[in-house]
Length: 113
Length: 114
Image (cartoon, rainbow over all chains, first blue to last red; front, side, top):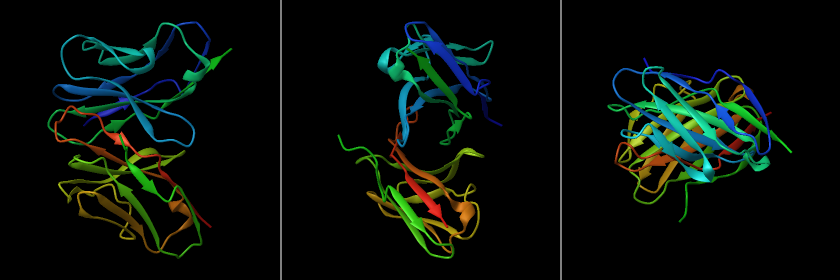
C-alpha cells in the first residue's frame, strides 16, 4: 500500500530563515513524488516533482526538495522564507504503475515577519 | 493558459436537495479527478476518469454520489439527496497522458448543506 506522512501539523519560521517541511513515504517500486501548496480559498498548486535522476529537485518560488531513498523522505526546503510563503503544503506520492496520487495530511507553514 | 475551471465556487442548499458540481479540465488533458477536502478527513479521491471513462470510483462514499464525463471538456459530480455531512470543498483536477505529469487543480466548490 502507498502512504505519505507529514509529521508536523504546523511549522513556524521567521522571515529570512531557512525552512523545511518534512515528508516521508511508503510505496513499492519507484515513487513519483510531488509537493503542492494551497492558499486560502484556492486549489492546490503544483510546486515540484521528483521522478528520477538528481536527488535535489528545484521548483517554483525558490522551493527545492531532496529525495532520500534510504530514508524514504522527500523534504521541502527553501533557503530564505517569505511571509508570503505562509500556506498549507501537501506532499503526495504515486507509484509508477498507478494513476492515483496519495496525499499527506498537510503541513501549515507560518512565516513570521 | 486557462486552468481547470469549476462552478459554482460556492453552493449553499438545504438537506435533501440535488447538488450538481461542474468541472472543465485543461484542454488536451486525458485524466480527470474529483476530490473532496474536509478538516476531518483531509483530501480524498472520489473518482477519476481516463478519456471520459470512469476508471476507479472506489472513493465515492455512497450511492447518493454520481459522476459523469460526457465529453473531454466537461464533467459533473452530483449528490442526490444531499446531507449535511456532504459539506466540504470539492476539487476537480486534470492531468495529461504522460504519467509523470502533475495534476492541476481547480479552485474548488465550497458546498454547504444546511
